[in-house]
Image (cartoon, rainbow, N blue to C red; front, side, top):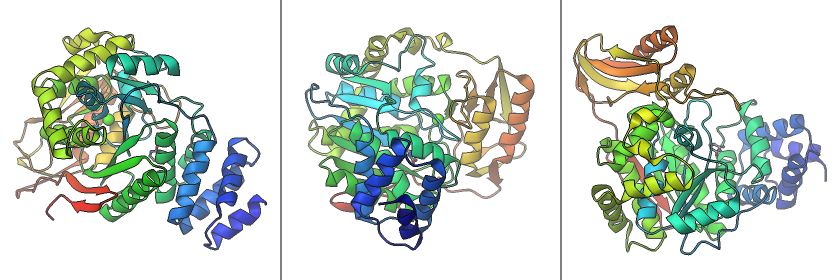
Length: 444
Ligand code: URA
Ligand code: CA
């Protein structure tokens, strides 16, 4: 076999065989095939696509490129969750606590933010003392003792994804359904969960801008999961505007605590309850996802989710007092209000650009390895459909640099579109996709 023939074959649109896929995945992971040939192949895949069998073969070959985690020492059905990436997507922190509080163990491996999207691991690092790099045995012990833990994904897992993702990032080949599906699912399969709940984002702030593409991506991932015996359920949720009110790191931890205190924003809380309800169902603790949703709601109301969050923080070396005193989290030097320049309804938000603006302030990274500032970001409590009065505060810029902050405040106003006529609020949850098929959950 040789790599040039494989590139040519995909270039002309033929399906690759399992052994050809394995040849390039293992060859690239071991450093035997150079970046330039894999770049050409990735572009051919971007243009020609991959069928269901090829995508499944690609995923499993990627899993074999690194170590895999054995979670069998954790009792019960382990359910993992993954978001395809968004802005103000403060779901995982409260979700892990609320699911664990209901008795389903969550051994979660998360990533860092990249580009306009935030990452759970960065957010957690704003908690003083919190350790995200924990040896696997200790990670398992914490889950057994406390019920949940969130750590950074080990660098030994899915070597192929690490190399291919970095290459895709610089070759314009990120937004390909088979490449995204195999990237996400290989990591979920390698990290050992029995069942997987996926939050596939769609819209202006997501990788998938169109609903039909998001449906296809979700369906592809559900099929991959089921083909390897890991029941997978996907929800397609809106990312046409930031999901929560906070875009940053410390401020997203604050928002997570607010959710657990029953003070979270409606849309963010609804996504958490929906995904959590599904996790409790797949984890065998609820008779239906609707019953699971009720249980998540109860864990917010009775405080057991917050209690669990504190236990997880303490078990991972962090200071649980941050949940009572936010001043213990990194704080910005400047808070700059952004005022509406006219009366009107919020009609649209350029969500990806808003995420990039938070990164410009230092909250995110434009390339891998960039250092981030945990204190800065954007508070944007308004949503599409809201009416605002001229002079009213619509957002706050948190910055350590006054000039940069002022520039961001001006820029943010350009990213929010107003209208004199009432604007409809955006739908939130579009579809549920599982092995039973597709369920539509919104009105057009
Ligand atoms: N998230 C991933 O983990 N991989 C992708 O390819 C895109 C989003
Ligand atoms: Ca975020």
